Amino acid sequence: MKEFENNKNEFKLFLIHERGYSELTIKAYLRDLTRYQNFISQNRIEYKEIKKDHIFEFQSYLGGKVGPRSFLRILSCLRTFYKFLHMKQLIDDKTLEVLKRYPSKKIKYKKNLPDFLSRKQIEKIIEKIELNKKLNEFDKITNQALIMLFFTSGIRLSELISIKLSDIYFSNNEIKILGKGKKQRIVNFDDYTKDLLIQYLTLIKKYPLVKDLYNNNLFVNKDNKPLKRRKIQAIVMNNLKELDLAAYGPHTLRHSFATHLLNNGVAIDAIRSLLGHVSLSSTQIYAKVTTTKLKETIKKSHPRGEK
Image 1: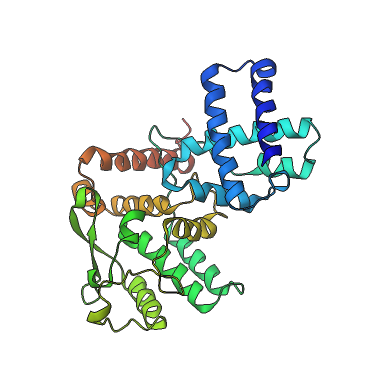
Image 2: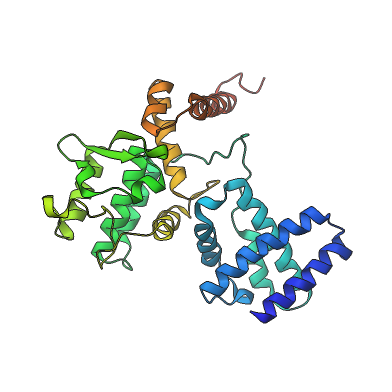
């Protein structure tokens, strides 16, 4: 990575002398670039031949560490860096286009809210997984069950990782969740998700649930080891990345769950309880988002909407 380090140092001088950026901006750019450097080093990626999937993997690598707004800033840094490399004739036009064309939808709301997925979009994602010939049966059912559980229960990534077999109650379509502050709550999932979970557990020979296995994690790999945070993020992002969204991670599915509930008349306080929010103010943003969406729909659809 000596070559990358040298280019990073030259990039710093470029930002100072050519762009005239402030000291704080340059510090932020170099910090973001170091994150990227760590990622490509760990994954042995040739940074001068970067592909779109590599950027998605980098976004997944950052995971819960940065929100959608912060990632847009990081993406801006990478674009500037790659323009610099292109100017030095170290990369070709094709590589530069990868950064230029990478999705960078602007965040419309004051808080970092990604768009929500419709039921139709989720169904298409599940169908696409089923038709993916590159995936074996285990990976297909794991991807489907994992994504649908996020979408129908609204749980956090950290909560999904910690689910044990003893936490699942198939008779009531419920899961006991240990949330933030070690507070317990019960979340629900629909019958379709139940079927997927049973198919998944049957495939790995853990259904019907056996008491001796109650301490096992719900989602595991082929070696029966708990799926890691980055792996779960990658599964979700790789399946959502073709959609036009502000963000592609598990939190987008959680937001989708809450937004659908609100749009179907569920009380905001009930949604707060289901999401495990301590403060109602954390949940009330959905009301603002729904109101904004409604105004946009009226403006587009109503005969006097533009007036």
